[in-house]
Length: 329
Image 1 (tube, rainbow, N blue to C red):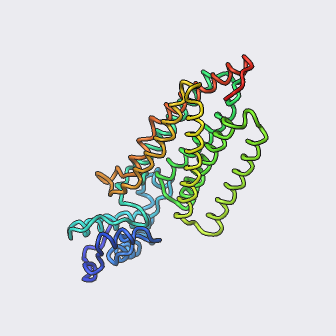
Image 2 (tube, rainbow, N blue to C red):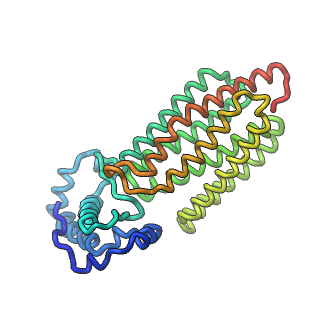
Image 3 (cartoon, rainbow, N blue to C red):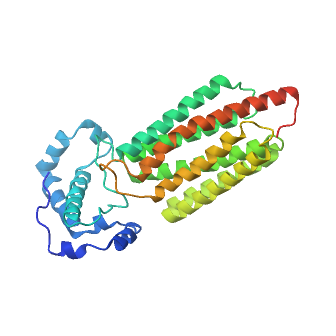
């Protein structure tokens, strides 16, 4: 596919300092896709390759898996021109820019962000494996059995959409990735509420469940119909996550002398929130594949095993105390 081979004189003047580049990356568009050389490259590529016989030739030569995942001729132009622009940045000694709010990634088959897609898939497989182990180990009569099963299904759905989103970033897949991640955070609060309060006061957990459903509906409605505000979404999820963290840690501290496995729960919530700080590193992808987001997803894979180990221990404890008629803590 043809690309622009000449650099406009304005290209050098269009470069900005690292601080300016970082600020631009936080805006609606990114430094890379605002460059004249990138925009001109895309326009020329689309005009040359995405109409008439050239377009039919592109479509006939395009692999089926690319067509099925929605890659168009215009998308391919953007991909090729992105690397042209990156090459010019590097030749001038400037930092690699972002494009459309993302770092440049080397596409593998139809996978737009290969490392993050693989990490999401592995997280989903770890979750599925431990869910199956939970079901084979814990009897259905355990008080938390159905709540934990529902939480696992919500988590599996979120990792599915995370995999899809990192495979192909579209309007729909981005929304589903964000919304399903929020659903997991909210359901984790419900899980915490049922375990700490709901077993003795079912009415409390029911009320909290209704409030969480209303919160989720309002959150999704605002992002869908009012404004898809990334800052608001991040702040909302961080606030909910902090509530979840403090709630679980308080419960762990209160039960540290009676439940020998309490440390597993405490370590899990601390790890999940601590590992999320990896996102703050935000560096250009190593080998154009591995960025901070992928490292974060890869780091959470082992946490599933520890978390479900806690859930299995706790579910068996609850079942035994229920049989003995002992008050649940």
